[in-house]
Length: 245
Image 1 (cartoon, rainbow, N blue to C red):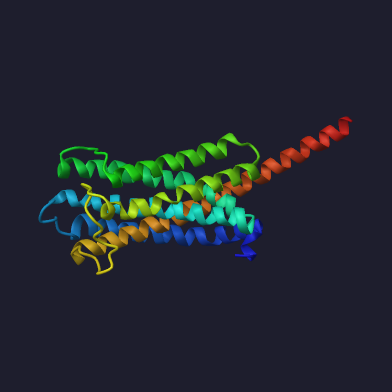
Image 2: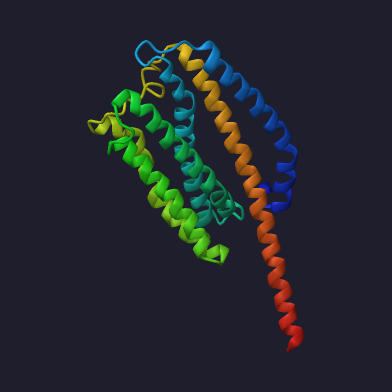
């Protein structure tokens, strides 16, 4: 981590890793989609509708996981002053917002045939909506404050406060009476889903995770280059002012 604090070394690492990650994503996503739509059987209760799970559940996992990445990066910004911590957090926010949006939309599409409605103010759904709003708030905060250091510190505080929502999302189905089904994969006594359905789900989860890593690295590279251009522009302005004086 210390060696990667050097942006140049980090950019070199991204350049080396991206092609391999892209290939891995193609393999995982192709395998996952094939298993999900051509191998896994329909559910005995939900029928073919259960196939929405293979997009909805990994998107929900990554929506929460991405915010945890931002929260950890926030600690790096406020406590360890890691040079790339704010870059990592800022780059992750739009990606996390997209995963959360996908989770909300696919959850609504899944809820219509199961519950008879696209939306209810269920604890799990409402806390996921709050997560989406937190992502939008972080993005807006970085846009509103021009100076990267101040924006990073303000966003880090919001991210750490917002991280309280992650356990609420996870345990809301246990704490309150909700329409949303209880956890069926990440359970103390093991998954309750049939292996024929669980295997494609795990493959799709791995594909989504690899996709997040790829998008995050590319977004971080773009943000580093953007900040370098901004620093050069400021230097040129300062030189011009000194020359004029």
